[in-house]
Length: 238
Image (cartoon, rainbow, N blue to C red; front, side, top):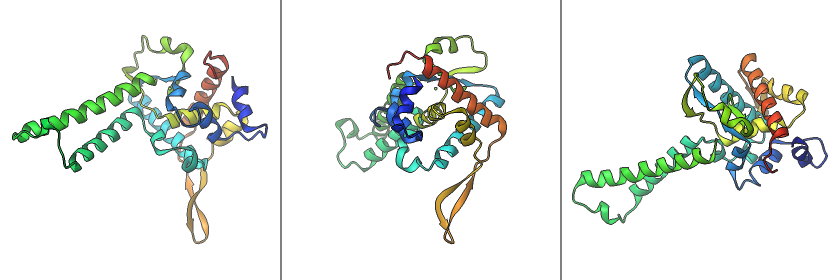
């Protein structure tokens, strides 16, 4: 449960985002390990709910930056959703094929349309496979639900489109980090409105502001409370 995670700080009482990320990704070797605890809710279709999800995701990203650990503890690919990762892989594959001097036999055809379709099919297949693998392995909140209740969350929903919510491992891990903290600490962090950046202007660190309304902040706290309960009651082996 949470006590196991809280002991990661060595008894100092200063649990960090890095501690939580390391724990839930098995020392950054398995980003999908967190999906054993949580899985994404279904995509909302109501415009108000869609905007709320976007606002929540933006707030979490801002809070990750405000933590000061984003450059050392959060790899860029951890911030990508499964779809974004598939798109990046597809672009990389397309660039690789474009720069490749030697082409496969199927691309040596005199027909330009055949050469084009050959390359396009491989790119599309690669993206589809990556997306399928990621979605198959992952499933987190109004953005997330704990896996003990996963089956109940996916039936009879009238406010979703039937597609899993796109959310990155880093975003879920940050909510798990909040869930691992005492209530007063969660509130203090989530209601942070500004932070110092690494940009120095006239000898002083530039200030960045976190713009989010109270409703969005309260929803993040609610998600953290849900995850906290999920960790306490989960049968996932820690």
